[in-house]
Length: 327
Image: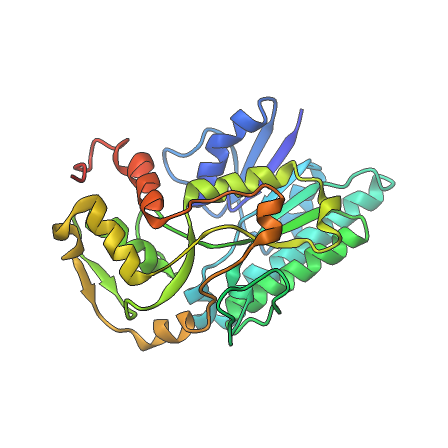
């Protein structure tokens, strides 16, 4: 039986991953770990606790999971506003986990070496940017969140080099359209300007519509994670952090896709309200990629923003009786 541990399993991506794991691993024993879980969440074993607690890391590692998904983090805006907490949750939790896994590796005589899939971020990059970021571009983050993710990438690479884990870091595009309520992520408006109008609510746009960004859907994100579990990491040639496919577009192009999906009435619900703090953070983010390594390794994402909206409608609106369908 394959043992699978999902850190951050109560979050949106963690829950969607848990729902798809039985199809990929029919014999798996899936354990979800998080601070809290949704009331009607995925029917898996659940453990609540603090991901940054060293004792918790030891308890989770002692079960010797075969596959570990590390999704747990506080989001970009909160990491920027709460400096100490960001480093504690987003970096030290990884340090404690890797240390605990190393202890289990050593105790097993070297036979225990789990696959670790870490959700990193395109925030590991900082400007000035080329027109498209290729696989050789320098990782030099300009936010605390990006620095924390970059630090974790280095740890995953080094612990993998030493043979304690078999890790891979996935630099996720901004995930859009995220269902549910807005969160503290500085990138949250990219989803909000689509999600809220589709659900008959007003949305705030805090940046100019000329802002360009790199996106993939929650469905694609789960596909990335599942694909990474079966990837032959020898093909990474020791470079264990990957840029992943996505779609680059401006906010104006997002809005035009919304207009095609739901009409002018939906677009009229977007209310421009400039926010200098968010604009300053977003200005330090990459805008477009040429992720040739990721594509060559079989990772796939949407090819236009219309498809990203269709995924949201299919998964979050068409399946819900409580929301009126868009036209």
